[in-house]
Amino acid sequence: MHRNKSWSRKLFLVCNFFFLALISFLCLMPIIHILAISFSSGQAASAGKVLLWPVEFTTAAYENVFGKPEYLRAFWISIQRVVLGTTISMALTIITAYPLSKDSRQFRLRTFYAWVFVFTILFSGGLIPTYTTIKSLGMIDTIWALVLPGAVAVFNVILLLNFYRSLPKELEESSRIDGAGHFKTLWKIYVPLSLPALATTGLFTMVGHWNSWFDGMLYMNHTDNYPLQTFLQTVIVKLDFRFIKAENIELALKVSDRTSRAAQIFVAAFPILIVYPFMQRFFIKGIVMGSVKE
Amino acid sequence: MNVLTRMWKREWPLHMMLLPGLILVLIFCYYPMAGIMMAFQKYIPNKGLLGSPFIGMKNFQLLIDYPDIGRVFLNTIYIAVMKIIAGLIVPITIAILLNELRKEWVKRTFQTLVYLPHFLSWVLLSGILVDILSPSAGILNQFLSIFGIKPIFFLGDNAWFPYVMVISDVWKEFGFGTIVYLAALTGINPSLYEAAEIDGAGRFKQILNVTLPGMMPIIILMLTLNIGNVLNAGFEQIFNLYSPPVYESADIIDTFVYRMGVQQAQFGFATAVGLLKSIVSFIFISVSYVLAYRIANYRIF
Image 1 (cartoon, each protein chain N blue to C red):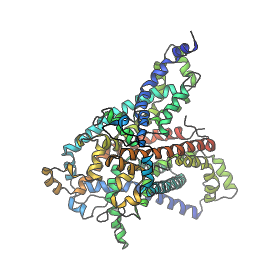
Image 2 (cartoon, rainbow over the protein chains, first blue to last red):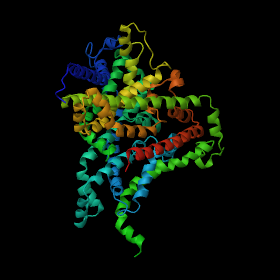
Image 3 (cartoon, helix red, strand yellow):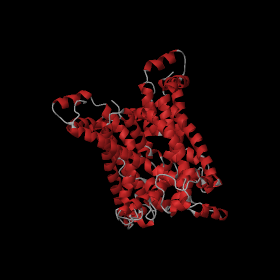
Image 4 (cartoon, chains in turn red, yellow):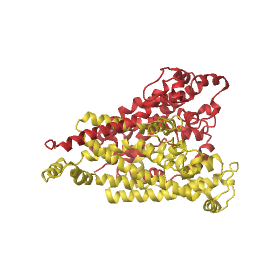
């Protein structure tokens, strides 16, 4: 491959590098732009002077955001949701995947159970019936409405059960011979060995909970119960004026709307920006394992 | 001791492990399926599922007579098909180009950067897109004005809206898709390239004759799995970016169901639309899984 260093090849390599650098920049640019706006003065932002670097640097927008009790409350609800949701979901994924990873000689009803779970990916009652179900359970305006309905993540279960199956059978057999039951085998053998797979699915579950907003909008009647993304949906995207109180108007005039929105977006994106580079190393293995099988 | 009790004695811990998950799935997935009855009712929330009067197929009749329904279906399929095609071509191209890079760390860096948008929610990305695409102060229109192009209201113009949806969706997701294709690329036997080179194939010919055929199984797999998504044009994205002036080109089945059902409280009617979508989706997904199994030997478990 290295001997073919013709003139056209070199030209291609240079162009390719710059093209891909441009593409990467285009993926990053909107976020840098928002960050620059959030640190700029209101006038500079609304005059459209800000490109990728703050103009008339100020942290006023952030002081505004962190001074807003609604924002902080929504932030706190999202944190609770991530912790509770991820814990429940991961626990369920682990104990559901284990029995389903057995073959049907070891566990007679395995195939039947597997289809019960898989069918839920194929067919659903739809938006309205699901909503009325949650409502009739009295879960409206509680955090359970955000955490429980999606707690059994069937795709994660499938990913994990495929991983369990790739582990050598002898491990389980020897543990059973040593007198460990299924629960102990799962906890002592399977869970420690599947930590990379669990880290992948766990991180994805966390990001999923942090990012979801639609269920918050659907199941929360009181805006006080909104998780962060739902709150932002109403403030940034739909511009709901219920959130701008009379005493805040002066502040809203001081800090232009645009910088404040930018700051709110960036603060909500920040936890993700920290976590996502770490996901790469787990994730590539994970997705390859889940999608490409021999 | 008969067979059943012996089986139970041996397998009960496994049943117990499945129990919590089963209960949740029964409550949140299977019980709502009973609510599909609403599609055949004039559903009155106070009277509930059992008290509401049955009206047979009237909701479906209403659906057929509804003036906008054809457009809603067409929009859904139009936007979804464009997304599937663009969402296939772009990641494959980028994966091939990334694979041409010599330095591993450059490759890794670019890869990490391009899949960043995937991890942000459509709420945040909508906030960013609304700002960037704004006709008055948006950075894109400022850029276009250098070339003397008049400001375009990308999110308020029916001619532009579907394309903005496709391009922004590709922008969000192509980095993620690239990983799958890159993985497939690294699995191609290097001796095939050497053989091609000895036969006098240039770099471009090698891509055409070695790389693409090598990627074919995974390309076909992704394509067949996407068939199941033809009725999902992207609710979260469109819901966060559309507005009444672009309903004409932007309304898809899911946004339509939301507006009818949740905002206008026409529960029976919205459920009928949703049911129709669920049935068609079910057929598409089943077909795509069967195809993926037949063609690419893909199994979900």
